[in-house]
Amino acid sequence: MLSYVFQYKFTILLLAVIALLCLVPGENIPGSFLFSIPHIDKIIHMSMYAALGFVALAESRRDQSRLGMHVLLLLSIFALSAMIEILQATMVATRSAEWFDLLANFLGLIGGYIAHRLIGGWRIFRFLRS
Image (cartoon, rainbow, N blue to C red; front, top):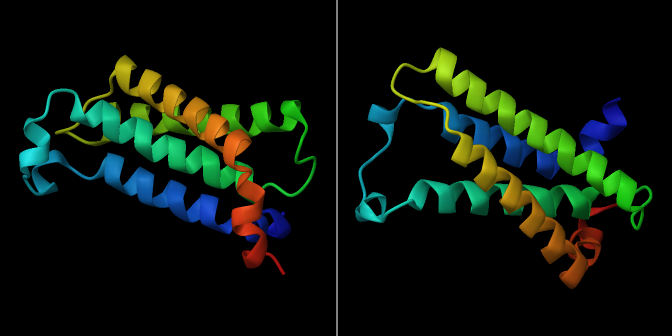
């Protein structure tokens, strides 16, 4: 079990940052002109989960080319994103869950998968593996 923690250390770190950003109360988020852009939150969700999917796939060592392993990994991350949305709706008074956030998360994961397949993400993290 501990080997998975070390294998996916950047994935876990990125997931923790995403969870923190998604679960912080709305009044604690500093205002920015970016938030005036329509649907910017969906773009942010897609970007965060594209990065998370890419990093997770890049860190996966075993069965690098097996589609089934990639699908299982991405579905696990998607399930975690659904749990974060549920926590937003139930635990944070100034935040709400949205179906379109989940859709943006899913599309981001697909984008991360495509980027990983096109770029070959394993090469990027090769120097980090010992």
